[in-house]
Amino acid sequence: MDSLAFGLTYSIAGGLAAVGLGLVGAAAVGAVGRNPDAIGKIRTMMILAMGFVDALAIIGLVVALIIKFLK
Amino acid sequence: MNLMLGEVPVVSLPAERLFDVGPIHFTNSMMLGFIGVAITFWLFWYTKSKIQGNKHTRISIAMLWMFDILLGTAEEVLGSRKMAVKLAPLAISLFFIILINNWLELLPFVGPITYNGMPLFRGLAADLNFTAALAIITMVTAQIWAIRTHGFFGNLGRYFVNPLKDPVGVFTGFLEIIAEFSRLIALAMRLFGNIFGGEVLLAVMGFITVWAAPIALPPFMFLELFVGAIQAYVFFMLTVVFVSLGTASHHETASSDEPLKLAGEVAV
Image (cartoon, rainbow over all chains, first blue to last red; front, side, top):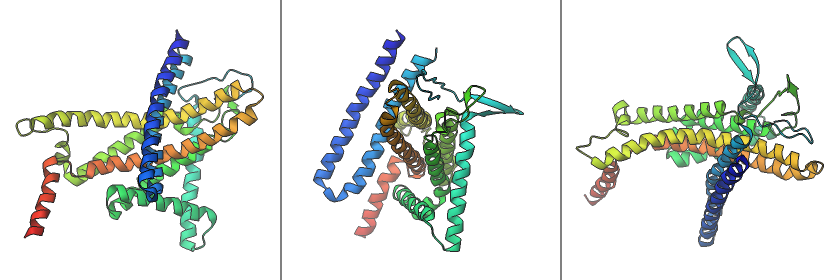
């Protein structure tokens, strides 16, 4: 049961974060396509937004590890 | 986090308590934290002495370059150079302390050296106490700046709205209170989760790729270097953004009045 909880906790958080990362990346690529000169600013903002999305996936990983290792 | 080959990695969520001096508990996160903060202070003093002597070295130029980029970002968000310079001592020090501690925990002496069966060093940000303290400092600073800008009751007016004047404002004000607390928790959990998750990731990767670890680990080490820098930047950015949210004019009516008044002036 704990293994199932571990797997589901991380896979749901990771899967949804992957969707979010895809949206961020697609929006950034689209923006660069429209306005190639602004690539420097867009890259910074894209990495910042990816940091926010990643944080949720990693909090999911930590919660999953708590389930797995701390009883 | 013990990185012994072939042993199942031991994950300990809280930082382990090494020894007590009087009422203060010294944990292994604090041991690395002292080193990291000492390095940060040395870097700042070194840069300062190089600027005063007008003899720049590579380190001082790199520090100045980083400082300039961060100050420019803060200026862009806050809207004025004066405010950016006033906030810089907090926000940019936070950036460097988090960055140096995040990078320090990737060095090989973190983990294998043990004391009473516990690792002597552990990443500073892999301890929730540290990140929660930073988050509280950030949110209290944001409140102090908001009080300084709007006055004490003006700041309370952001959260408590007269229901007779603005029925919808009551609800948004209530949401604003919840948002402040969720920001606090998210700020602490984001940094802690990333750094702690990174440590666990490295330990697990070292464990599952037993003899191939020297080949398998470097990409993850680079990932952790990157994540550490990004998280330090994110923390800096959020500090600046929260302060700017507090100092910006918040009344919908007030902000929509301003352009109208300007337009009127231009017409006159």
